[in-house]
View 1 (cartoon, rainbow, N blue to C red):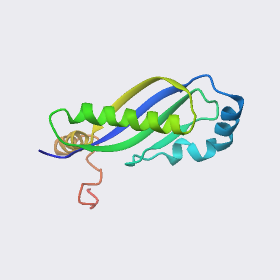
View 2 (cartoon, rainbow, N blue to C red; view 1 turned 90 degrees about the vertical axis):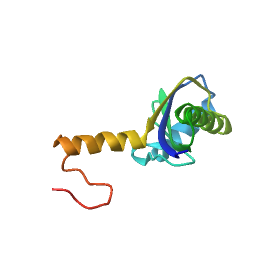
View 3 (tube, helix red, strand yellow; view 1 turned 180 degrees about the vertical axis):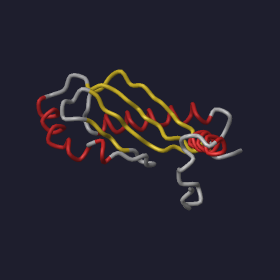
View 4 (cartoon, rainbow, N blue to C red; view 1 turned 45 degrees about the vertical axis):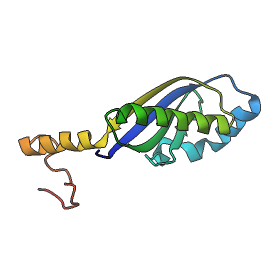
Length: 129
């Protein structure tokens, strides 16, 4: 079975929280800015100081016919564990997984047709053009 790599976004909304939790999140917001976002095995948690919504990003590797569903479930569990561990109330979670092989194939197909990605950097790190 082929190992597949997924970049997964778990989005949600902040729920009612205590004043101390709200104050802590606002104070830490600079460390959770979208510019610090990355798809990592442990995940990164980002939000804006307005505390309306958040995103948990992670990279999950899975094998099997149901790899995308398993990766999505695993990412959701990771996000919930993170939120619970940090005392953050939440709701309206949604999960979106992108199979990176499919993304790369799509880009390669556009390259072969001379589409908008034709000047992109190929997988081998050399610059096309």
